[in-house]
Image 1 (tube, rainbow over the protein chains, first blue to last red):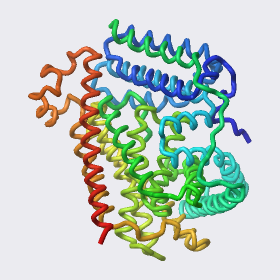
Image 2 (image 1 turned 60 degrees about the vertical axis):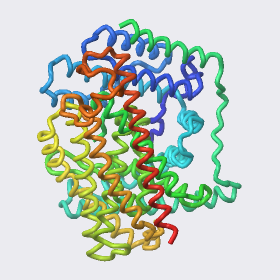
Image 3 (image 1 turned 90 degrees about the vertical axis):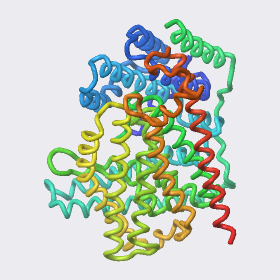
Image 4 (image 1 turned 60 degrees about the horizontal axis):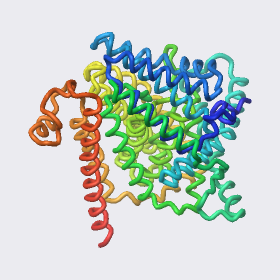
Length: 235
Length: 301
């Protein structure tokens, strides 16, 4: 079973990967917000931001095919929603579409240049609620375990079932599958908690990273800030 | 139902970010989980469970398929606040891992998918089922809470999209509610099915939420929570719609100019938004302060 569908390329070591998580969170959030504030009628700004995204993609060394593939995977919904808005001119629909795609690409870039644990560490340092950070780190760790269990159950169901059962039966199967998975999750949580306690856990979760905020981070942040202000100032 | 970036007006998306952020902070304070207790791994693993359950598709009529959303199930199992935090974790993970829903639209998605489903689902379940429902009553309450949670959630989603001017309210509301009335049946049946399965197999697990700590102050809070978005939506709606608050502010120095907002330069527009956001944060802070004081009072006697 494939387990690396989440942060598949986060372990590369391009210049973008080597930056600290906080830098990237700030920079990418800034870029996404800036994209959302591009006025409908300024084609040149859309072009400039597309260019900047492309440059970042180039620096990041994440395969272009992967980014395009992920974007295409999400795209149908965006296309559907844009087409459902014929109440505006083509300009507005086009701008909406381009904005959505740009934001999507920037988000893909952020999650694929930062390991999830480092992203969490960055969020924690930004003052994200502790309990949410812990939830996310447990989710990340147990996703794979539970995915495997769910896959095994699905396989077992598909082996024992020919074609499709009647609606009631099908529903009963799915709800008992979910119920079993739920009980297994409870049991995992109980076992995990006693294992954690026996290893001296007392409520804190150290998230270790060797990255530190360096001059490179400062330079990158300044670059992004100058870029955003100049694109909006020069307009 | 995950809203991508760019679909809501920036004003609406950013104000919903603030609302959801404040709700998350409030819930994180409210659950008062002992960070070394067993609740912490439980919430995390259940978040993983919901994340996966949302990928197990179930064939509905025709070629479409539905899946469990799980908001009301989590709220019933863990209590509304812990359930909301767990669901928020799922929504954040979906945005980060699967790019389902945008980064700035995250507040809107947390609001629709986590807050509304958990709180409305829990309220419906408690109203119909009471603290300890069994048998048929559990099935009915579970079904209705699952179904209602989706209806509320999709109604808010349609409202937000309409306020952003993308799709007119009548069209959006009928399609969203119509579609989710069908999908909600699946959600309701699965919620009821999982609950009754759990009651049959491991009845001890149904007690994790510490049952009856949902007092009068919480009901008042829930009411405020439902009333607040209506006010926010009226405030943060797009400039195409008649906006009473905007008219109210037009005379004051808060609004930088009385002219149509389209004519402002983008920098001025940004500061305009920032000022509005600041005003909004102050209002929300006042609201939470009021709720906090009300809770203090109700706890004392």
